[in-house]
Amino acid sequence: MRRRDFITSLVAAPFLFRPRGFAAPQPGAPPIARVRRGGPGWPAAARWDELRAQTAGRLIEVHSPLEACRQAGSEGPCRVLFRELKNPYFIGDQVGLTQTTAWVDAWDSAPSVYAVAAETTADVVAAVNFARDNNLRLVVKGGGHSYLGRSNAPDSLLIWTRRMNAIVRRDAFAAAGCREAPQPAVSVGAGAIWGHVYDEVTTRGGRYVQGGGCLTVGVAGLVQAGGFGSHSRQFGTAAANLLEAEVVTADGAVRIANACTNPDLFWGLRGGGGGSLGVVTRLTLRTHDLPARFGGVFATVTATSDDAFRRLVSEFVDFYAKNLLDPTWGEIVTLRPGNRMDIRMSFHTFYQPEAERIWRPFFDWVAQHMPDDFGYQIAPIIRTIAARHAWDPAYLKAYAPGLTRNDDRLGAPAENVFWAGNLAEAGHVIYAYQSRWLPVGLLAPPQQAALADALCVAGRHAPVELHLQKGLAGAGPAALAATRDTAMNPQVLDAFALAIIGGEAPPAFPGIAGHEPDVTTARKSAREVTLAMAELKKLAPDAGCYFAESDFFEPDWQRAYWGTNYPRLAEVKRKYDPTGLFFVHHGVGSEDWSADGFARVVK
Image (cartoon, rainbow, N blue to C red; front, side, top):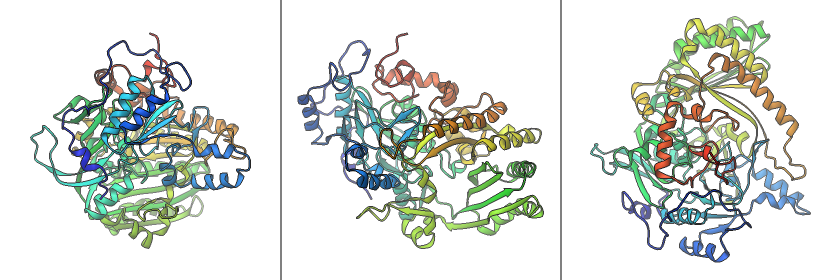
């Protein structure tokens, strides 16, 4: 177990404390603008030294490794660096990097001036107080997997929680101030990543915890965004499984938030989007009985014509509506230009023969029209695995070596693995990215033809990913009830999928010769993504989208991310952060600030 400094944080008073030596919040009007490095009001070196002393030397100057590429004679080292940018563990261990390098015409990865490499809750308190008292732009980074650039900003102070990575299984957890019976849970530091949590909870503990799909995503960021995994329809979102959080609010207080203590803050942290209400330092998540088996269905079907592809999509929509819209099934079906359908679906509990029986009518239908209309690029594969081995690094390396990649750095821990399918995301540059929840009503027989038509037209412009585990229509009653009690847009409860359409490229960075983004290609991709998503918007013009996976340029983001929950979230923001210390792009309350978070908007 990763217990480093974890017991220290556990002894914090359960409701509120302020360590000695930290400044109390100063009264007065909210700041009009935050200070920048080199500008009036920027803290003198002596002030930074005070913060360094308060955090036991954990204040560090931040420099992006990418800057080395600008130096003369750096071609060889720069090649090595860009090779390392395909290793998400390398990126995660670099204070000056983020897992996404840039979004063309939106943002570039920019290092903070200083960072507190926090190891204790007291370190976070010191950083929050310093940022507030010195009117600084504050950024929080754990896993660093923010597509929209929310975990970086120039001229800022960064709270880097990577080292707060303790993972402790709890056989009988009772939330502070609550009278409910104790239940199995896991307490996780803010810097932990899901691969390590799964390894601890499932491989070692034989339990299930609802988290994300990508193994290097940070736990805290995913939970606060909402959080979907392969089996969300069975267990609910990650946010719905949060039992308690320790959080440092803008006044420097350490608060426990659960259903009985600070319940309004607790509700806001569950799906209200990270970085807006406070700095989460520890989370405790419900764990579940582990299903006997996990499994997957894999196939790639190609169609010989547009008409054949239209019939393929129509057949799948009908098959899905009749056979797979239940808590058992999840993951992704992708429709690609060139009339290709990729099936990458997951299931639980079933053994292989039962899964084969369910899918046989669809694959038999495809076979009946081969080779004139269809062919297989990848013939159907249906496999199951004992659930306890699903995230077991040693087992996966031995029996499914193609599924994972290793952290290839010398001396890296053996448990540092990531899915091979996530390799493209490591250090990537985003060209465009849009998402929309598709309401389950589109699966009704009278609507299926229109849905199939829209998907086919959209798929000719850009790949359309149907994330079937990111819509909870068909979920079990417990999953629906728990997710309904979170801050996410209620539309997720009535959606059969989150449709994601995007474009990306390998790591690139402006101003680095030989490694600059292809702006022309990026803008072409953005136009194609917009055209593709327009087809789906015609079917669901009022559909919302997911805070963590959405368009940087989303115009109506308050409604899209949170729907009818936004006014309540705004009240929570005003209560716990009245001066707007915490800012992220399109986060709660960000409409009060300029796009970069430095100047208050005059209303």
